[in-house]
Length: 375
Image (cartoon, rainbow, N blue to C red):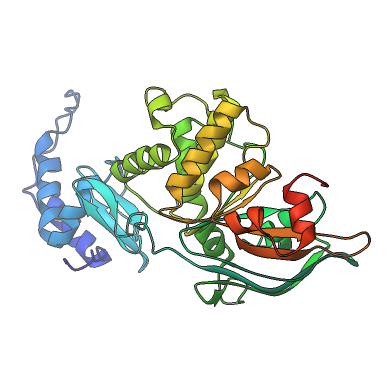
């Protein structure tokens, strides 16, 4: 790799000016004679001299520089900037770490979005949660297996959605909220003080009950919005590929590929929800949390979302909250039944293989709930 551009010293600037003024003096202009415009020769001489006194790397850097006109001599530059010669003057460009000028454009050395990571195991150990003094979850233990869909079922108010928010650190956004226990992603606690919040949110994505695309943003910009929020740099070609692959995985590409620049808010409810799924997938999460993603959708859109979930389970671990027992049976591999008795916090009554829990559960309360006798 070429050495970084060195600033042009004041002495170099002086030599440049000396070269320009060392021409043979011309005869004085007679009184009353018309003033002549300067010829291009002086400018050409100054440019040639500047090139001789400028390191070779500077000439490469000028490929992306904007030309400016400066009448006064160039000012001294400090150690933090690089002087970039142009045709008629000098401009300053701040040094940018981990970048290089290539083909007249700024090219980043930051790697493109990471490829699909290995399937991850998400494990909750002794999770308890409070809102103020009110305890809403009590010592919940649950392992969400890699590459499978885990459904959280139970009546309203038993702590399912609270537990889901704890899994990607959204619970701590509520001022009065607190929790105990640990959440491990492949054995690493996401609540560790040394772990960045943005990294936890990138690894564990969330799709909410109500579709929430950015309404004024285009479909294209909605998909890549997460890149900026998580600090991922990508070229235009990489973004194009990412938009297509994310929308394809979300089952939306064929429907919107001819209108990617139209607002995301103009899509139907089911399409908006799939757009939100595509937005989550664009940052390559290892786990995808879905809080009742089909509760506000019609049966046709619900079927498409469910088909999407089954396809995505090959690439990410999925955890879904649902009140629809038929949906839990259709899409999940494992199931956890939450229940909160009157005046007591929510807890898991039973967990295990979905087919077994719906056909031959060990707890009679599970049998009553999955058969619609309460809840």
